[in-house]
Image (tube, rainbow, N blue to C red):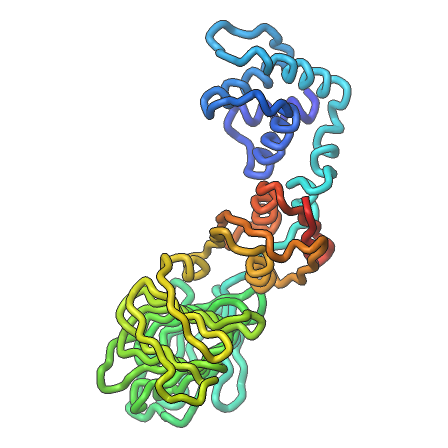
Length: 378
């Protein structure tokens, strides 16, 4: 049995891997090049089984399999294809320019749960899922939860409000932390937060953010919570929200999921330049001006739930997010930066799966060259 027959046998037995299924789909649709032939999902499955029968030598079509007659020529083509090329099947599919095989052969692994904690004395500690350690300093116990989040526990009433820690993620990293006041923060790739180790004792709980983070703020009316970025301030009492403030993004976006927040511009001289958000609204700060729009707030936090999800986003914006998570460089060709794409995939999938889904739009082609992704017209 040659390689093609083995693949189809695995398909019939329900044993194909995700990549093998993509290869099979790609081949099937290449054979099914007649746009006038339209098959429903059930008929498509029957057609694949019949294709396996043809290739395996069982060439007689059974009466209970209902196929469109135009499809017969593809089964014949399939049989000839296998007999002639046989063992070259995988080579042909993997080396096909722009196909999943080509992308997979130069694959790039996704990011990981990892960060660097910089203590007040300058000591740096690498945090990851494999690290199990507890640090005690300045009246605090710093440890890791079972699900990998960093957590601060007050062991003495001496936590110093003037001592600051910084949690940083590099490209290809993300991490979660429970702050000294009980607030939960998820830090996206290439981001950092700086905060007082005595955060629960400060008059105003101030956090400095660079990059992107999702916040679930512990309620404390006596101690308002503030998040400062390079160009804005967000004030809350207790709420769930997301801030995207990467330096390479054209705008700063604050999305509210629960509660209420006040978003103020730090780039404008007028003290009253601010907006109050309600759940489902997003504040967009651009050149000192804040505009508010209504969105599905879950779209802003898909990254926290370990998913990429794009709904008619321009490819330049999409690839900035991809570059931060997979730690790759992106090169655009053919003036494609404003092409709109949609799709979703796990953030823990290899990059080839994400790029293959984007290629299926028929608008773009991706080439992996080391740690660079080249984006061009299909």
